[in-house]
Amino acid sequence: MEIDDVEAAERRDSPELSEVSWALREVNRLTDAVNDAVTRRLGVGHNETLALDILLQSPEAMGPVELGNHLGIRSASATALVDRLESSGHVRRVRHPTDRRRLIVETTDSARRDVLAALLPLLTDVEAIAQELSADEAAVVTRYLRGVAGAMRRFSTG
Image: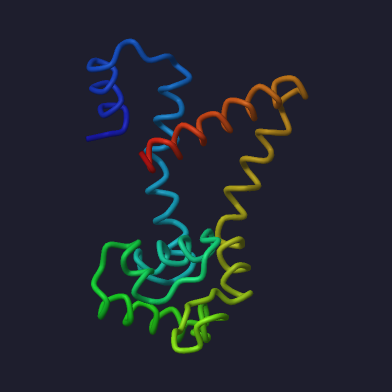
């Protein structure tokens, strides 16, 4: 089924949504394709890309087991995943700062650079589109996107 067919079917089921909402729905649908492109560019597997994303965004240190819990995989699989990321140079295992008995997984500086480099063509295109907006338009779009991010955060934690 083509994306146009998917959207057409969704529109029949939810005709009350605005064009703005449909445009955002299309962006959300394309997220998986973007993640697949990043995975290819990094030369790692899908779970490795998801793990890097979790680790790069997490404000808290986590070990392989916690990482596995976030990914919905078993402890042994999480350990193997961390082994692969470590051998590729994307993460390292270090002692927990306050509990020396525990190991945590930390991303390397090169992992950050590699992820950013993989995303740079997309970010460059998005920035070019943003530069076409007037200051007032940019303020409206920013307010809208921050509001959407808040709604998504509430939805995902509620």
